[in-house]
Amino acid sequence: MRVFNRVFMILLLAGLFVLGVYMIVYAFDLFGYKLASLPITDLGKGVENFVVGAENGSLSATTIIILILLAILGLIWFIAELKPTAPRRVRMGSGTYVTRTVVEDEVSTVAEQVPDVLGSSVDVKARRSPGAQVDLEARVRRGEDLNTIKSGLQSTVQEYLSEKGLPVSKLNVKLVEADPRQTKTRVQ
Amino acid sequence: MADGIELARAASVAALATEGVHSMGRGRYVEPATYEGSEKVSGVVVGPEDLEIHIVARYPLPRPIPEIAESIRERVAPEAGGRKTTVVVDDLEVADDESL
Image (cartoon, rainbow over all chains, first blue to last red; front, top):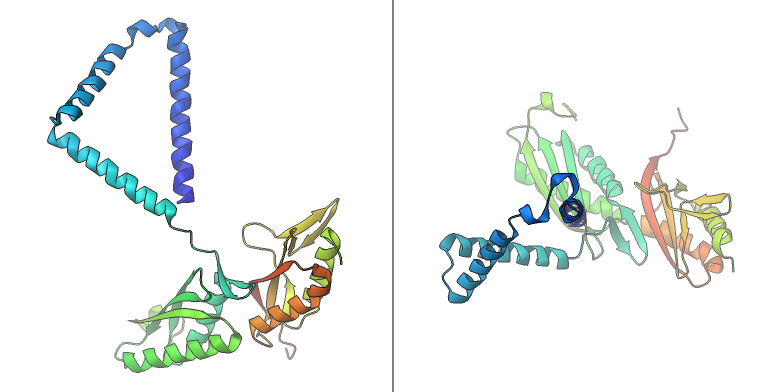
C-alpha cells in the first residue's frame, strides 16, 4: 500500500502543479490566454445540474453506478490502509529475528536432501506472531507415491527447522511431478 | 555502561566472539550501523531504548539460532544499560571446509 500511496500522491501533486501553472497563466493573461475565455460558467452549470439531480433523485443509472463504484473503491482503499503491513523479518521469539532468505535457504537445503525431491522452490512469509508461513513446492518424478513423499518431506522439514530453532507456524507442501531433465537434480 | 559508539563497538566485539557468528550483518537494502564522527560500526544500531544487533550466522549452525541470540544478549547485557536487545540473523555463511 505504501508504494501505491506514494505513486498516487506523486501523480496528484503533479496534477495540482500543472493546474497551478495553468491558473497563473490564465489569471495574468500570459501568452494570449485569458481567464474570460475559460468555460467556467458551463462547468458551474454542470455541477449545479448534478447537485440538483442528486437532490431530486433523478440521476441517470450510469451516474448512480459510477458513484457506487467510487464508494466501493473508497471502502476497499480504506480497509487496505487499516490492514497492518506484513513484517519483513520472521520473528523467532523474544527479540530474535531472522530474515526470510535465511529460512528459505534452510528449507530449500533440507528439502533437496530428501531422496525423492529433484528440485524445490520456497516462499516464506513473515507473520506478526512468532513463526513463518512456508510454502514449499517440491518437484518429484512422475509416477511416485505423492502422499508418502509429502508426509515424509513435511516431517523432515519440520524436524530440521525445529532442531535449528527456526519457528514455522504453517508449512504448506506442494508436490509437482516434473521431468528430471528439466529439474535441478536428475538423480538423488 | 557504554553509550553510543562505544556500546556499538562493545556489542560488535561481543557478537563476533559468540560461537556460531560468522560476521556482522550488512542488511539487505540499508546497512545497519552506528556512526559517530568519522567512525562507523556496522551491524549494530544503538537507540535510546533499544539495541539492534545484526549478524551473519555460520553454517552449519553449531547450535540453534535462539541459543546463539541468547548468548549474544548475555554478553552484551552488562554494556547495554537496560536497553531492549534485538538480534537479527541477516544471512547464513557456509563455513570453509578445512579438510580441503
